[in-house]
Image (cartoon, rainbow, N blue to C red; front, side, top):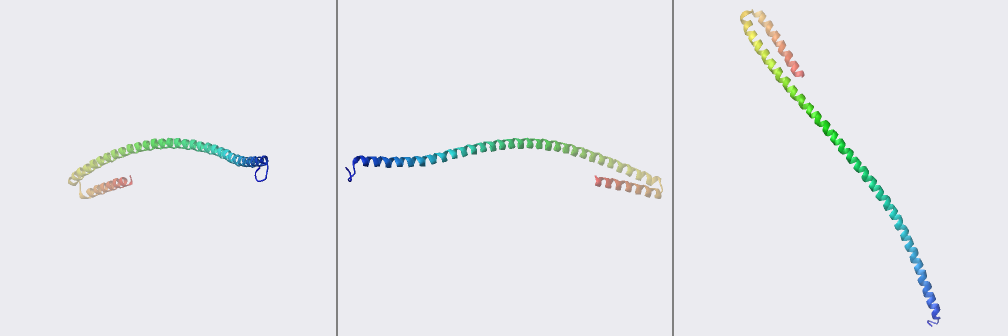
Length: 144
């Protein structure tokens, strides 16, 4: 006997207390397991969302690469076309300069030959016509 109680009663009460503590601990563990399962489901959903976002990002990157390639090709073709136009324009300018030099030589020769052969009045008419011609060429050159 302990403390005036029969030993069987003491053992039975100790077992009952331990059983109550075990049940309480099982309830706490059950709650933790429920939260863990809920977190697990949330984690699965989060992983699925992350995989979806990664797939979308990969698709967007592919589309951006394709757009960049298309823009590069378009820009290269425009640059080549601009270069061709630049070369063509330079050729036209060179040809125009050669024509102007020929006209200047012709007018110079014409002035010299007309000065000797024609009276002064016709010379002034020719000079004014040449001035008008050169002004037209200048205005066209400035407009181009």
